[in-house]
Length: 295
Image 1 (cartoon, rainbow, N blue to C red):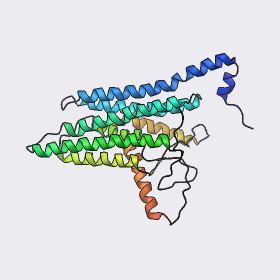
Image 2: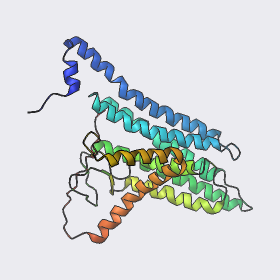
Image 3: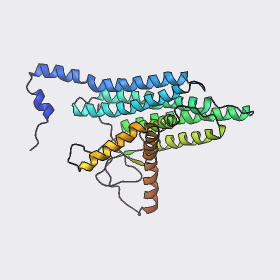
Image 4: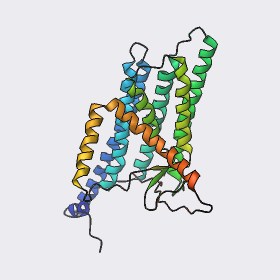
């Protein structure tokens, strides 16, 4: 027999009119986190346009703002589900916020930081071509991210090209917050100091193209949605979590970069592993739960 949730029992002590009023008010809570997501993206844009070769710390602030937005984006949907205040409006609001914060803001940041400040070193024609290629790469990143969000909103249960473990939940394609996180973590790693060596610009170009491809790919990325911290776990897990957050606070420049690159590389690794060990006519058995969760 299914027991009523604690939230439902708490609401049942109020009359129907009061409950309706409370429910309408509760919709504000997750939307506030989505608004914070947009605010962080706007702040990142404002800091990006202020960045120069001398005042490169603006780029680092923009990268940190995108990192804050990643956290806010993860909290708004979770809070909406915990408080049972999901709605179609919240889902669309969240998608529009993601286009700004994880699409436009990191694309502009990636171009300003990695291409616009490159010195010509006596080869102005090569410099101009590299800047133009940077515009193309960042535009492809932006279009790939927007396409990833559109696919997420319209598909009910897309199947990745490399099925995973039964019972585990996966994203199909690299989520756009993770793609923006790769850009932000890379810039934060060097504390915002822009690329001034033309030899590094092609590597930045390649990374942007890889992230864009992974976002529109059908490769699987673990979603962490089946993790349940409310269940009983060995006490050693608490020690490991404390150690992780301690390292994150003390070495955040390195840890955030390692986390972002590792998550991006996990999709590549699982795809290559599946390619080399797959059998003909192997059925897809994973659980993907990629359908947009109403907010």
